[in-house]
Length: 304
Image (cartoon, rainbow, N blue to C red; front, side):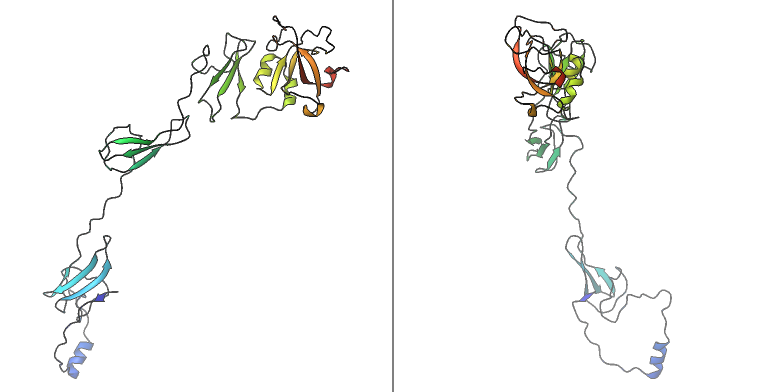
């Protein structure tokens, strides 16, 4: 709605004859007539600049522009004039570079902050700031460090599962490989091939009762720390029986049957501490070690 800021000075009264009134009543807008000419009041909509008007110095307001300046038109010398100031709104803030800039690279907007993900093995973002000197600087660095190298003797690159290895029993940890903080654990099995010893990210550990199904030390090692490969030890005359047979058993330090997985019993046995990682029963200087193992009922002895 237009706001009239100045009233037009009233003109002297005049007489309208009947004939003149009739001629006005029958008048119609002809081609070329300017509809913005008013009787001295502000048009409801903003008139076009340069169009004709009546009412000298009549000032009309039509709100504000994008810069907060009033939108005004003035009737002067019989035409509408635009009094609205030129509006130059500030440009939008620049977007952050798509690729993370290096510290010291030039920037154009001091105070601007940009966040970037990575490296892949880190969960926290890196935040860079455009300093007053026109260069990027790192304000918040990633909270993690580069992954440590594999242990001495392990391949620098992650070996493929099933590829050949030369040191049976050797375990290697590789950080930053899985989508979780835990490292990828690989073990060199007795068959001379690499197997995955632990992967807590992709799958939960197998239930302990699955250990009894592993037929070889390599299969047992592949089930992770929930299982252990044991070899019978030298029972001699201690009264404690030797482990009935070589095999894969749950890694449970039991004291009672209730602590063992379903279908197994807690039994004190003698195992070979040197041959626990070997399926052929190879021994060393030590002969027997006493330990409690969860064994199937067929392997339990009456004296256990």
